[in-house]
Image (cartoon, rainbow, N blue to C red):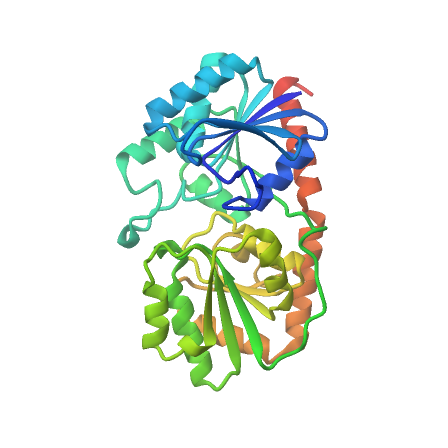
Length: 367
């Protein structure tokens, strides 16, 4: 089968910088059985083609705007020969231009909504449901796609609230790479947070929760991994809260550097106001790290059996649940074991098989 995956970003010639590990794992596995071409809409400055993980990556060189992105994608699809299925990851811009191109070329298409497609958080101007043009674009992409998928039950619920029925197929992690390792029991406790520093990840709630822990004399350190898009605002807040000496801003880390951080941590903490799923939760669980966080994405799906969930923006509840788990080793071990069992059962190999089945249904209707 010839498959085309269309993405906004998440692919790099080196396979390390600014990549989405779950997408890399999916592409590598699909490429074992199919011919896979990945079209990247917005990453490299100039059009570039290179091999990666058995697939061909065609970076389209940042065409500006949906019209130019559609034109660039359509031209490449026509040039590269007919595909059996087009698969877009994220509703905008990939889903919109892929659905349009698929209809033009009479090819079945899959749209995976794994971002803010069905969210609307006005005070931080986040979510595709906030503005008329983006709402229309998501409606167009979802209606034109042959099949809609999401990665979590939480996101499926948001899609349903807007009138869309979606298949839930989590993008599993490579459990050979993300694996447990021996860690020393605390204290001192090591907490880990992995996310770009931006408003939707809500580092203010994270840091205020951590301040409460320190005020309760919990001997803890917080590692924050992620590219800073807030020009140091989070570090400034840590200083104002008096916790800067216990908070470590580690910046962007490639996967091979991130895994040891998971493996040494006692708790993974999520503070996001929205997550369509949250692959970092899966990565942490694969490494044997229990998670506590806001009731979005996988945290919402897993609570209370595989994670602890609290309402978004509730620093006191987040701190209380972190402290409770740090003081109860049996609960931590139980959550970690249950979460890891789920991740192993829904790993990257499982995901590729699920998409194989879906693709086959699209190319052989009635199968």
